[in-house]
Amino acid sequence: MDGIVTRSTGNHYLIWLPHTQGFVVAQLAGKIRMHGLKHTNPVAVGDEVRLSNPIPGQPQTIEEIKDRKNYLIRTSTRLDKQTHILASNLDGLWVVASVLNPRTSTGFIDRILVTAEAYSIPACIVVNKSDLWVKHPDEADQFLAHFQGLPYPVFAVSAQTGEGIHPLEEWLLGKTTLVCGHSGVGKSTLINALKPDLSLRTGELSDKHQKGKHTTTFAEMLFLNSKTRIIDTPGIKEFGLYDIEDAQLGDFFPEIFRAKKGCRYSDCLHTNEPGCAVISEVAAGTIHADRFKNYLQMLESNHAEYRR
Ligand SMILES: Nc1nc2c(ncn2[C@@H]2O[C@H](COP(=O)(O)OP(=O)(O)O)[C@@H](O)[C@H]2O)c(=O)[nH]1
Ligand SMILES: [Mg+2]
Ligand SMILES: [Zn+2]
Image (cartoon, rainbow, N blue to C red):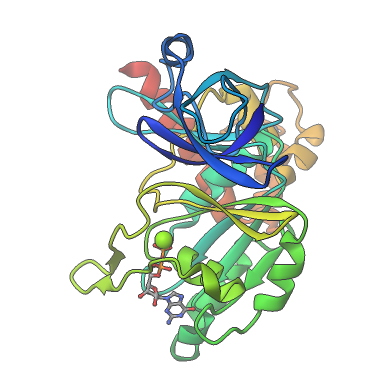
């Protein structure tokens, strides 16, 4: 019997069975637990699995994880460098951000976008809380300009007023979409706006740091309709790149990938090499200076890792 992991809470997994349209709870067979040791979670939401027992209602064990079509993975910045698979078998990714209350750094978003490129997941950027922009229009414009000309759709929305929600809904119909971003940017509120009867818990912002409380505690796949699935995740504090070498990094910035064909040296890293077309484009303004700055920072943090 086959199913799809919709929730993982430590030892127990909630599995959806497409044949019977029902759910069962399963544990993990020991052999898989050992095999998956290099990741903090051997089984991720979205995984297709084979179960031991063909009878629903009986105790179930996950016997096999089918090959993943793709997945989104990150490392923690802690010393142990554990890797965490956020979800697998994705058709799309929402990187949810807010300009105000709290402000998401573009560096955080760009690291997720780079990983999405590396693992072939079509991403879009959802900038929530647009209702707060009337008082600070310049900040919002500046934030949105960061993504101009990139091949990622940008949706400016307000989960609170419903502004801009409709195009976002169209984007996800028929897909399995992962929703990620910092805590407090409004991920759960957005999903509730799309389907109010889900009644996901949302958090009040704690005044002190203007960060969200952790009201979503585990990743969970939700069904908007039979073909449209959305995976809500707890807020991610940091998103470390996993297994991306210096020489590849630029290829995961679409505008650097385009420009580098003009670089004098084929192994140019666009740091200070003569004849670098990327640096010329940054100077000319056709590559956004902050995107380039974030690229250099990612290179730098790769090196910080090797020094450890
Ligand atoms: N002003 C404003 N507040 C919002 C909006 N969306 C969510 N919030 C608030 O932001 C806080 C965090 O929302 P939540 O959905 O729990 O964020 P999550 O941690 O990303 O799931 C809650 O207090 C929401 O009411 C919005 O569009 N505008
Ligand atoms: Mg939430
Ligand atoms: Zn170059």
